[in-house]
Image 1 (cartoon, rainbow over the protein chains, first blue to last red):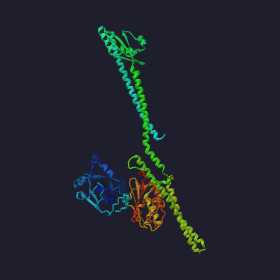
Image 2 (cartoon, helix red, strand yellow):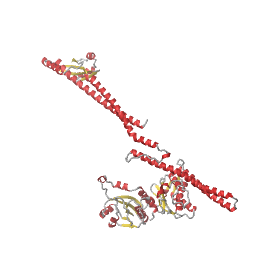
Image 3 (tube, each protein chain N blue to C red):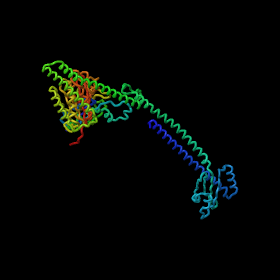
Image 4 (tube, each protein chain N blue to C red):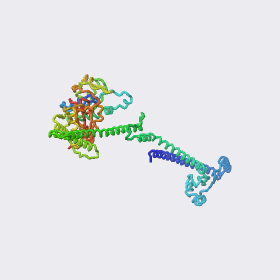
Length: 159
Length: 459
């Protein structure tokens, strides 16, 4: 049996810890989708040359993808795949359509609200309102410190 | 040859070649046009001459004669020749008398117009038919345009090319000087900077261009140089101090002991102190020697395949043996099960030394609180994280932690020489590994070591 799970990501430590927690507790194989929620670009040229792939490529940091690799190496038989999806809309319907298209079985949320980044938004309220089943994980209260090293943080933070 | 001269010369030669190509092109096409034009004029004259000479009606011939005299001026050395074509004629005689090739006549006899040039004299021949008789009409004349106008054009072009060449030469010299002006300025400014005045910097403007980038690069290089000079000076003073302290203690103790006759116990005590200090001295010199050896890149270190988890367990054992109060927890929550993901290439003794230095620092500065050691691996690297809950490093002093003998301002209560971390860094460098230290004062220090994964295939 396989399950597709969705984790909203802001490329901080929180989604990595969620992934670690889910992988550690899951009994089935997982296909992981990291959902990056960001507003559509404002400028006409950006819209003209709009490419979801490029936006995601620009957003995913090396540390974050290395963190993913660490967790994937820890649970190679559990985590079958990891991919990134872009989401622009701020409506429940749009989210449900997106979830249906990607065949999402469950969304994983953190209790603590995500730290807001430029241009990105936290989809947690939308997910809570939608019909997609979701699970909230109580991570240890974790102070967001951007000057700290993300990879180091992954090892240091115990769930 | 200077680059400046080379650029000027290249620019000059390219322009000159272009000028010459252009000039010769113009000259060539003018010649072609002039020749064509002149031959056509000769053909017209040949038709006219044939009409005058061979026309049956005298009135018409006179009218043509008059027309020619009135409208057409006589060309220099203009001559008309008429030959009747009879069957079996081979034009040998004619060709010899006019010194023209036989093919010239044959071509006309076949009904084409024919052209021939002999020096400055041009020949043009046509076939003229009159009452079932055929004639070859040849007109020859000196090409005035060829002999005079083209010479003129040639000299104009020659002079123009020479003048332009001189102009281009001066422009290219000026241009190359102009281009290299900033470089010369940089050279002059850099010349002024030596070991005595390393604080001097190149003056960079706010313009964002290549030259400014070069200046900024120079400036950052000077920053590094200045720092390393300062480090070296610090190193010597620190090293003398570190080596001097135990020596002073030894000398002082010995002096006091020798001042008068002492009891057996007092001697023992003195010698014990001297031994302690001498051992400390030995430790310092040993670690210094290690530092020097690892810092020297030219020396080959024997590399073998090392399993990081094995290494970490060994380190834990060593650290806990060194001081029973030390406590090391190994966190396996992120360690991959696949042992292939844990193999790196390195010298196990050196790696052991480096990691145990970092871990023992963690134990020491946290007053023997447990130190956490975690392992994990990405697809191309193995990561070891050492976390302690010690006194931390003040942010302003983070830049100096790799300087030999440097000790942070909050370490006075702890014994140490400040060699461990520089030594670990040197070893990491030898293994193409990176070391990242993050710290918060009074919260703890975390050191992340990232080793490149050794790809040994799936066996």
